Image (cartoon, rainbow, N blue to C red; front, side, top):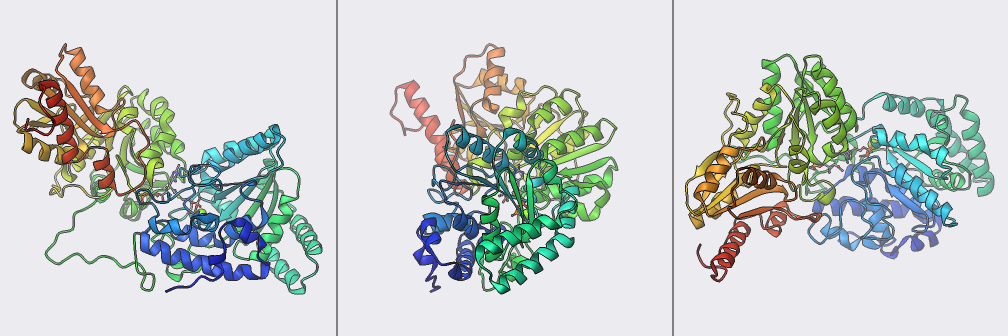
Length: 631
Ligand SMILES: Cc1ncc(C[n+]2csc(CCOP(=O)(O)OP(=O)(O)O)c2C)c(N)n1
Ligand SMILES: CC(=O)[C@@H](O)[C@H](O)COP(=O)(O)O
Ligand SMILES: [Mg+2]
């Protein structure tokens, strides 16, 4: 049984701050070891958490948390923070139903000062907290801890642009590990590399070690670090142009330097920018060597590391929808030279690794910059290119105006390959693709498709690509029902669904991934089932046909009921003058928590039993019979 003698004594940061500094390296070793053991047993974000062990300890050691507010950007790197703030036991149920969230949540702890998970919000929030403290006459600091990947988003620069003007005394700590999920990209990344590899970093590191070796009184040390750091920075850095006092870069794994420098920075007036250099995966060799694979692994044996699951020889492994997309993209690129793929920093998650290798000149990772990704694609489409934007449903929310203003109004042929449509599971409410059917179908010119299986996904991607206007194909995280994926590609008739099961009295109109439970429920009821395929344009003819021949229509979608695909059916019925009763099944008007996706679907009544229950309760209510009786 692993032992953590020092970590066992830390119930909260006050305990940490009572520790003599000489014990902090041991605490870091125990915390890092605990993170390895715990995350290997539950799965979760791994390499980013190993990289922030010392930084987390130093932040809680120097600042009077939770009175001083730490805002973690993205927040996937906060397991150490959660462990040191009294939630170590909760790590056993990390990202499981009823367990700890994988990101900071205000309702989870007073130390989680701001809910994050979508990147690049921390500086804005910290400025807000600093201005609030000043307005309330409270003496507290607000510290944003942001990664170099998160720094590539426009929102981070909107905040930097405002910080001096706001008068907010924020401290921005850049956790620079030269990685996003993939390798970080863009000019800022190169700039940071120059700051890191130039004379600044080497000199600071050497000086700090020299200073520490003579161990002068701390006050003297702090003063000399500050002078030295100051003295080096002849050319002002980009961050000083924004009005922040830049310090660094410093070694983010050296607790002494971190504590001294943070303490020093904390005492300086005006907005501060501390550049900290860390290694993603620090302390676990396999993650240090491959921080991408170890960014968000499932469960694994830490003594062995992640091993590729060997499928049983006879079993043909089911491809994920992401893999179906990635394969289609390469096939389509070979057929049409106009195709260019764009991703906002999600190469692996969106299935673009192979495409990036096979078509490097037609592959663009724009960094965490969804707004730029969409309008960049629109610019290409305006010039006859056929861009495919691979983007998670939840992250497209960041570029909603660009979708409308730059793509749809101009009716430009951009294909949105919307991965993670529906409930994603462990990442929870910030990442569920819950709203895309609603937020997409109200946009004119946009064709919105939801495949019911892997082959239909491929055909819909082709349909979107050959359509002369914008289109979105939304598919869920993970695998589908296991349909054979035909290599041939056939464009589907736009706006056409079809009846896939003939029945009577009740007709279930299924959209996307929930066709399977709909069919299972229909088999029990003798109901009709339609695969609607298109959320927009909705197949009004099919809706009218079903309304004219059934007593009850049931719409089923893995998306919010409010404004979703079912609402499109209601609108079609109303326009056609039908008054047939309709049950709309989908995600409820609440933020669905994190947990196992199948369990979450069942909790939302979107599995076979849930669909059956809703229909039977309706029928018994309307026919005066008790729930539970056969329809
Ligand atoms: C708006 C948004 N887009 C994409 C993501 C997906 N994402 C999560 S972490 C990450 C990389 C973050 O890099 P960095 O800030 O450097 O943190 P590190 O993982 O290196 O610690 C990305 C792209 C996100 N969380 N939010
Ligand atoms: C923190 C973050 O936003 C990403 O790491 C996200 O968790 C990836 O999600 P998938 O695991 O679905 O690719
Ligand atoms: Mg990084």
